[in-house]
Length: 436
Image 1 (cartoon, rainbow, N blue to C red):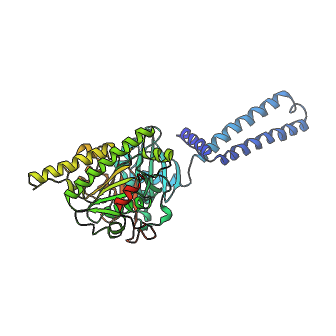
Image 2 (cartoon, one colour):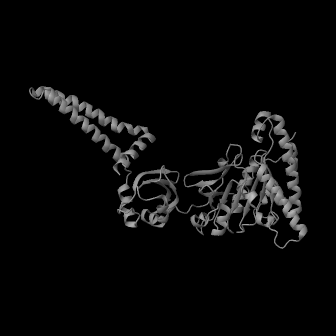
Image 3 (cartoon, rainbow, N blue to C red):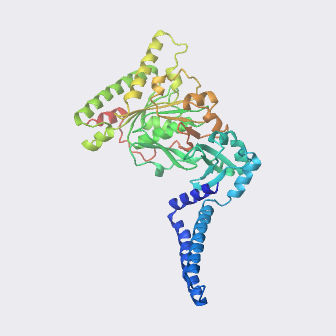
């Protein structure tokens, strides 16, 4: 166990190089002591000034240096309060077969939270997960995530203090808008600002129960896309009532299946035009083409507030089912091919229906985000039930990504597009302009 403290101390010095001064000063002090003691032996005369006493002095100081550095490394590898943490874990029953708690090797502040690193030769990562409630109670923290460390004997726990378990609403500010093409900011986790880059992960699926905040998150992503000059099509069979600012100013609202099918047909035509552009210019994607040619071809966002209502065939007649199948097929094509051509899908749903989103579409959606949900919906969105387990019923606006990141989404006011100059253009005119 002491070896682990020493390794942790060395790791701490690597991360914070100024700490090397501590053992350096100690070694310097020991070297100074050699000269002082050697001088004292000379003053004492024979036999103390002889070779044997000098050798003994060197051996003694060398041992003191080794023991001292070993002790310093252990001290540096023992975080403040580690003894109390380990004692509380013992009381909570988080122990190995010998009744020993895991060693706390480090505790580092990261954003609004803390990252703990534990070591135990007997306690695997899943045992920490089994004792999550006991760990939270014993340490007065809220565990955000439990992850394997650098090997099977090390475990990382990301947590926030108990009184920070529930974040307040975080209002959007345009200062948060990313300058990267085409990065969209989601919100804040306990460990920093979270975002997605749809130029590399092109499509997004948002799930959440009623009142979870999924429509607000969708509005946030659409608002950012507008401010990055994207062309927006929003399929909302409720008539766009939840999106007054975006719907009236910045995008085409699609309220009927026939209109959606026609729009997707036009977008697939644009996809083919863009394919020809990329081939002719020898570029592999829209961002590269824009940079090489000096053009400003806009990205196209096809959003749907409730994808289940769009693709559900229950109760439809034959013609309606054919229409839905056509829409589904076109969504599938965009999901497969859209990334390179700057055409992206953002879907939201609250219905726990595994048959609504077919595998070919879902498998091509790299970014999946789940808000407050039951285990069924969480399983559909994330392929696990963590959305139901990590987000409490009172956590509106909290979301979990399929990469395990828990964050609070920025809240967008209805005047989110204030100050955006649309120059009187409709979205179709803006689309034409991209090919001038």
